[in-house]
Length: 214
Image (cartoon, helix red, strand yellow):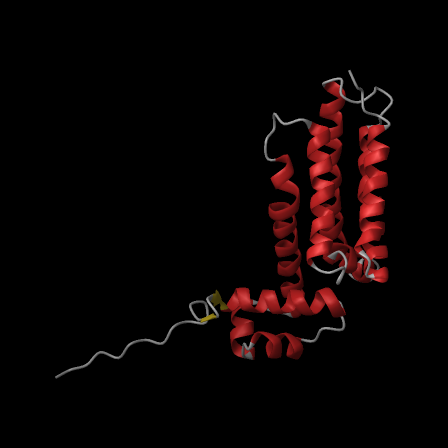
């Protein structure tokens, strides 16, 4: 009787703990780089953490640099999906409550991480902006998108007469982004969620100074 030999699965089809090989690599690399940074995380570290062989790694990524770009894409997608869009998904929603919702989600994210790791985007921006132009541009586009979303919400609130005409939407949004990044850094240093809560409370008071009440 003739038997048919079953072909072994390709590297793309293999999985670890229900995850594809590519997902396992990305998850491991993100965990390591969030704590140790891009330069201090070696390819061998990623392979050891993910349990993936070198051959399978190069099936999915041509280099550590390509892995780095994939990580940035994943970080951005996660940030948008879990933190930004849940508050801004409804285009008819009230803009100021949407911004406050976003601020609360940033606090909750730090609480869930027990004040460890800080902001993955901010960490990479600090480490790589002066040494890798490609990463700098990609990271700059992330913060530009974040800033633009808040600026759009503030501009809409102004159109609806919910904030005063004196509110510069662009400048206020940039201040919110910069302040949040600073607050996350201080929270990482202090390991005290109260620092994050206090800073976000002040940001809400800042927004309230522009709010038009009936």
